[in-house]
Image (cartoon, rainbow, N blue to C red):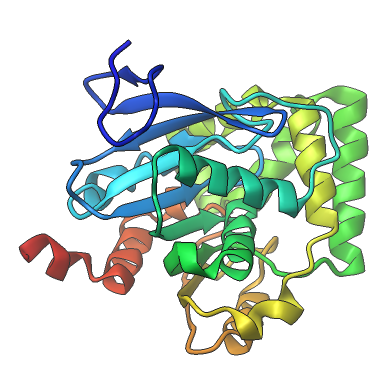
Amino acid sequence: MNQVEGTGSTNTAITNAGITDRVVSGEAQLAVRVDGAVHLPWIVLSNSLAADLTMWDDQIPFLTRSYRVLRYDTRGHGRSSAPAGPYSFDMLVADFIAVMDHFDVRQADVLGLSMGGMTALGVGLAHPERVNRLICADARADAPPPFVAGWDQRIAAVEAGGMGAILAGTMERWFTAPTRQDRPEVVDRAARMVLATSPVGYIGCAEALKRLDYLRHLPRLTSETLYIGGAEDGAAPAEAMRAMAAATPGATHVSLPGVAHIANMEDVAGFNARVAEFLDISRQAAE
């Protein structure tokens, strides 16, 4: 293996498409990937529950115009290990920071979706000095009783029947009916991620989601923040995200019409355009 300058790692594999590595965080081994030129500022991406770092593939071409992009598989997902649960957001935040530390990233812009967006909020609250701008996509910040009950049901289904037991319901939440009907390639790509997720990892993270409690702390979030989500998202409703934006000093909320939960895959152009606007990527690329 070749050593990559600035990573502090001697077991880093360099491919034509990017850098892949593994990061140890507590009892977890996290699969990570870096794309983009070494002189660019960092952005760190955090994935949804039951997805992996490839969920961001449609964002990489435009992000790497202005960023060195660091993404990782959340513990229990993708190529990361799945330690015995339950997990907590303290663990998920610690994993995020371990990934940053491994590459000596002192501060970065942060983008997370669903559970990844919740993790991003946790990082911003616990480690404000590490976060510049923060994008929280299709996420909640609290766990009301119906939300908890839904996770109890899905945990029971996975315990009884594996990831296949929740696949149909997950696709219904993730994408609108027109997308499920007319864009099977998008749905199939997402379904493969769901089915590849470790049941142990899924349940471990679902237990963390049941204890989500960031909403009351959002008034002390100091990062410039964008909340973005699908207008048809039932898992992270637009009204919940508007309340999060209202609680966060100076935050902005954007709702993408005709889009459900996995907005970055369902409306690539719309999602990318609003993220690029918030990050001022056009200006950065011209400098």
